[in-house]
Every structure is written in structure tokens, then in C-alpha cells.
Length: 399
Image (tube, rainbow, N blue to C red; front, side):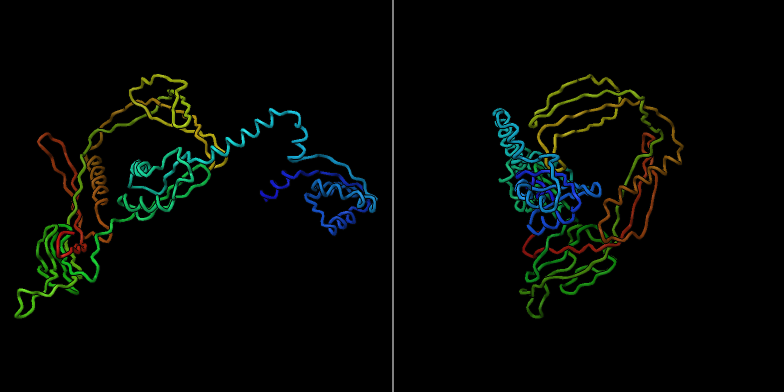
């Protein structure tokens, strides 16, 4: 529909009014003669308005005469009429040409880079990697290889499982997905040992291939050999058979989290006072227009950016930044000891949960409060888990 309207505008069209008693006959004859009529609207029983091309309008005189209808032009629209109206204004056309050229040049660059989808990995890390690959505001769109950039980022930034790079308008959009770190894999056709990926007490050993060197109840350290890929052969002790060890070693493991017990609470309350600074950004250069000194002891900062744009994706490198500072009053109060302990224990528990790997089962939780020499109290939460600590390692060296 948009292309159709653009095409009509380029070749020009007229909005006409047709008056007579045989309007249906007029429309039918135009249709049979392949004249395109659009936006047909019946005004009265003997009057209607419609839109048609300039070429079609020149062909309806005999049709109007045949049907006894009168036709008059209400409006003329399109590029041909605009050119005719301003045919004597050379400066206008020169300005229009310059505008079109500048618009084409400006839309040939990437002016905005957006990263979405990341939660744990900082956005600045991804921006730094993009900059090292030459991707930053001001780069020519035709010099960007989206597939190649996506492949480099997912390979060189730890913690990413998927990256998509897409250019829309003047915006380069990087969508990422974070994943759990994948342990190094050893091909099945290569011999390997199984070692412990963390400290623990062995609960179950299930070895499909390989020679277990530990048993249930053993305490193991990180990196300790659990299942050997060397299997001795009777009467051939010097040349053992080497296999690719496959095993599942469940062990009891412990994770610890701490947080201080805070007996005072700090509340930040807005006073209603605020100050704003306005800056103009042109091609990544920032110019401060209205600078005010911020003399608040404590404040919240709010920053808004307003880019010159046409739609969501056609963004130009001209921006107004408004930084607003809201003054806060700091109000301190005392917290009940039991309430403070409960808050600290909950925060310590949340911290330790971040360290629990996927697939680990929490089987026991313990908590205690420790008082140091200065009288400060620390909440300590220990979670006992059951998890698979088996990690393959090439026999010829480290992982």
C-alpha cells in the first residue's frame, strides 16, 4: 500500500467530482476501459468523488459525454504538479536535490548501536568487543558483516550462547542470549580421565568406562583424579589399555554466603528540589547548553535522550540529553536486632544461591550468626548440595 501511494504521488493524480444520474454506468465503463479509480465515495444520489491518474483523467471526456455526467477537478496532487508550481524557483529544486543527497549519505552510516538480551554480562563488555571489531557509531553500513560480527562475539565473549546482529535503518541491533559455561569436551575417540570439578564427599560412583580410583565416602579435592582412563591388563602392567572414561560421580558439596547484620537503616527521601542540565550531541560530540552546579549532598540522577529520528530505526546523530538531579534527604533509623538478623540471613541466602550450579540439588540448609572482635555480627548461610562433580580431562595433559 505504501509503495502504491508513493507511485501515485510520483506520477501525479487528481481528485475529481462526478455529477449525473448514471454514476454506476460511468464507473463500469471506466473499469471496462481499464481506468483505475480509487477512493470512490458517494456524496449524494447524483454525485460522487474519486481519485484517478492524470493519464486516466484525459481519457474520461468521451465517457462523461456518453453517460451525461459532469466532471470537475477538486484537487491536483503529486510530484508533476509540484514541479510545475515551482518551475521558476531554481533555488528550491537545488535545495531539494541537496536534501536528497544528504539524506542518502546520512542513512548510509550506522549511528546507533543497541545491545539487548544480556543480564549477567555487562553491556560495556559487548560494546568494547564491538569497538575492537570496528563497529561503532559512524561506521558505513556496507562495511559491516553481521554474520561475521555475530560469530566473533559469541566466540570471544565468555558466557554467550547466541548472538544476532541486524542492521535496520541507521541502527545496528545486537541481540544476545546468555548460557551456562560448557565444560571442555573430549572427543569419544580420545582417551581421558575423570577429575573432580570441586571439593566434596563422594556419595555415588557410576562408571560406564574407565577405572574408578575413589569409592563412596571418600573426600576429594578439586582437580583430584576420580576415574582413570588407564586400565591395567593382566601380565602387561607397563602397557595399560587407555579408554575414554565415562562416569557419573555424585558428591555432597557445600556453598557458603555471608552478609553483615545492619542495625541501622538508611532511607533516602526526595526533598522536591531538582536541577536539570541540557546538552546537545552532534556526531558523538557533546556540547553543554545550560550547565548548573549540582551542590546536593545526595541525589538521584535521571537521564533522558531525545534523538532526531524518523520512526524507530532511522535515527540520526543529533541528540538532546537532559540530565535531571533530584535532591535527597538521608534519614537514619534503628532496626530491631531480630529483624536485622532475618534481613541479613535472607540476603546471604540470595548470594549463595547465585553460586549453585544448574542441576545441583539442595539437601540441607544451615545458618548461624558470627560476632567478631569489634562486636559486628555476620550472618552465614551454608547450603549442602548433591551434584555431579565429574569432569573429563585429556590424559596427555590438563584440560
